[in-house]
Amino acid sequence: MLQRLVHVLPPRLRAVLRRIPILVLLYRWLRRGKLTRERYMFAGLAAAAIAIGLATSSDSRGLAPSGALVLIVLGGGLLLKVRALLALLGVVVAMAAYNASQDVAAIGPGMIATLTITAVLALSLARTRQKLGVQGLRGDSMLLELRDRLKRQGELPELPDGWGSQVVLLQAGGSSFGGDFVVSTCDGGTLEVALVDVSGKGTDAGTRALMLSGAFGGLLGSVQPDRFLPACNVYLQRQRWDEGFVTAVHVVVDLKTGEYTVESAGHPPAVQFDAGSGVWQVSSAKGVVLGVVPDLRCVPEHGTLRPGDALLLYTDGLVESPGSDLDAGIDRLLGEAERLVPQGFGSGARELVETMAAARDDDCALVVIWRT
Image (cartoon, rainbow, N blue to C red; front, side, top):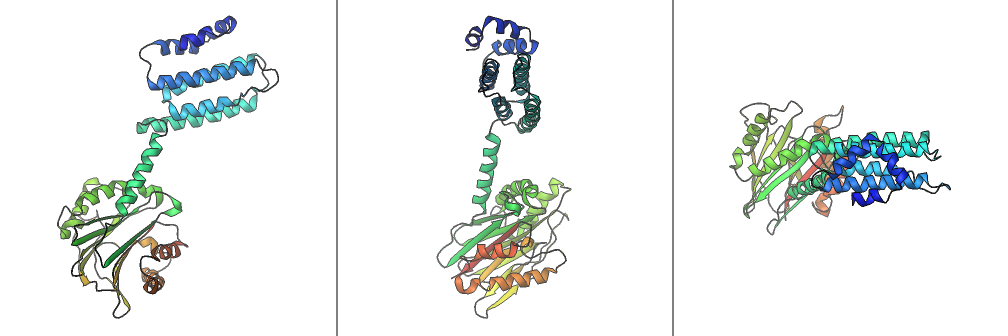
């Protein structure tokens, strides 16, 4: 294909191209060894750049798309590695210089500046993708797959008749990734749920949350319930992270009797709604944030969910505000949650989170478990 492309060029143009060292080196490189997928993409983009350059130089009415060279450079930034992209930029520069030597009006200072800026952006994009070891749009699709996996992992398992649950995750700034996540497991008779908050917000905390969600999800159900938070603490101790901290609340519910146990590691307290008295009871379960002390000891709290009762787990993004007391934020949350009682805990959970998060720029999460 490459040889046929060269032979169709006018002899005078071939003579000019042979005087450009970089084009000669590229020609020899393409003919050497097996043509890989990247070489095919490079050959296609280079051929398109040459075709655009030739069309521009022979166009006397200003109809040739000289600006399409910008698209060639952008395509190279998405599809090629840095070395191949530099070679493609050499072809683009050679064609722009050839057009400039032919006094083509389209190749002026504005076009040169546009090509330069686009080349810098394309190189930056190619370097980032090369560090990740992915090319093209594969890196974006990988992030989408990770986001979907995290969302599926955050969904609570299907519960038996007489029980309901709802999870709402709202990331700061509308990001797909955040520092709040949920892991859960259910064997039919026992439900385990852990709500975890990684310090930071949005994408900054999302990378750590992605790693921890897999690790904590593997621990949940694999260790005894009373060893879950200590095991998470040991895992974080081994990571030796310098940035931020991690809080978590862990709940184990017996789906036959309604008895539950709550353990907290520096997390805002869980809240139970008692349908008999109509009162919201704030949990007293306490513990140190994860990863700080080598031997984590949590003070659990036990309770029972009767028909009509509900249990709320939430992150500090729902209740904390600068200059405001945490208890005031919890009181406001419970005041808004009162509206869930007559309309049902599942139907208004997202509206509750959106109302509480309206004045905050932080990741917010809410888990509601209720008994009908």
